[in-house]
Amino acid sequence: MGEFRNVRTRCPLCSHVFRAPHVGSYVTVGRETDLCPKFPGRQSDGSRLIRNTITMCPACSFAAGEDFSGLDLTFDERYDIEERLGEDGLLKVFRASPPPWLAFHAAEVCGQERGLRFRELGDLCLRASWVCRKEREHPFESTFQLRALRYFIRALREEGLHGRELSVTTYLVGELNRRLGNHREALNWYVNAERTLGDEAGRGAGLAWLDRLISEQSKLAREQAA
Ligand SMILES: [Zn+2]
Picture 1 (spheres, rainbow, N blue to C red):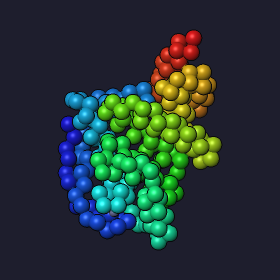
Picture 2: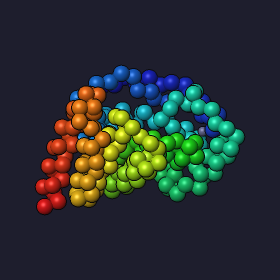
Picture 3: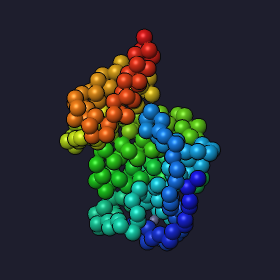
Picture 4: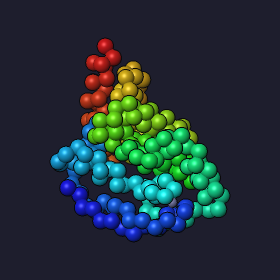
């Protein structure tokens, strides 16, 4: 399993000092078809490893995937983030006993105010859905899959993705649609993802695994759509 170190951390929003777990090196044994890493051992240990990639301040709920010491918030960002965290419905309800996905939700809210790219916001929601699955929180798994899907579509439309990021994101839009039961929509996106790989270009860039995955998941979606 992964190693945990507790690292002294200062919140960039409220200056509260606390000890946050940091993930050291860990072993994975492949990935699921939505790219969720598989870990040896119990599901809950894997969930903890993914959760520890997000730091959340226990005092004000500021959260981010980045190291807090590298974050420098502007006056306006601080103000806007404080407002958002203060009025967020889910944080109000769940702050007292945080479910495993709450830090991702907080990081998403803070990330919106910090102007993170849609691709990055989608990634936060995707990781939240992995944690929900490992923790058997199925309604929340779907909620986060849907949010990830919407961010990824906006990223594809507005952020000029290219190369590996374009191919992987397009594939994920297909795969998330399939997991949400939209099989025909999924098939269209798998075709788009296949196109982004080009002929030799994409496969030469180490994406043969993605090409294989697209074929397998298209076959599955076709069976499910029938
Ligand atoms: Zn704080």
